[in-house]
Image (cartoon, rainbow, N blue to C red; front, side, top):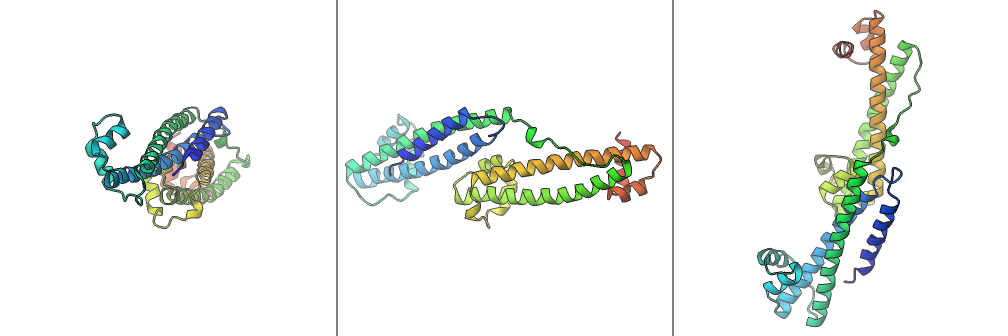
Length: 271
């Protein structure tokens, strides 16, 4: 299997991502890291298949394979376990099997090196992440009662939208693990979710949603809605405190804010 072109493509994409890194491309490193890790696993599987061909068809010893893979014969048991767990390809000449095995091993090494570089870029993105995409401007009335009612109404809508967006984000992240070879951890990281959020959606994962750009877009929507929900909650609480200071009781405030009397008292006393 010739994987030189895909490796070169990843290398070029990584160079471009590093050059264009910034607030307008906050997930390029995460996406590439996930894709490269999946490609690395595929390359490992391919290399092990040809390792099996060399051992079972052409008499290579486990020590020979280990030395070729790791540079020294210090992980023979690990190599044997990996190679015995795969099915070798159809029998070909020893020369061709050796050539294909060494090419696959070269891909394994290059893809791993690129994965580490992409992971470093992803870490830089996380460290220098800009929160400008979560800045929120609310359009609420000035009058306290009207502001409280409007904030409460918008907060209910945004909370429902946020829950739906999280569901869609987690579905797409699960699709990456099922259909694109991503690990649970990397798909969850790209989505800004916990691994436990991804698991429940794997059984019904749709191949059409196995797109890292889609996951990144949905993760951005979740962040935007979360920021809006936080801003609306803050506006609601401020209005409650203003009206409470003016003499309005918890029952009336609870009715306007669509929360319980107890929650109104908590908000009032937290000021």
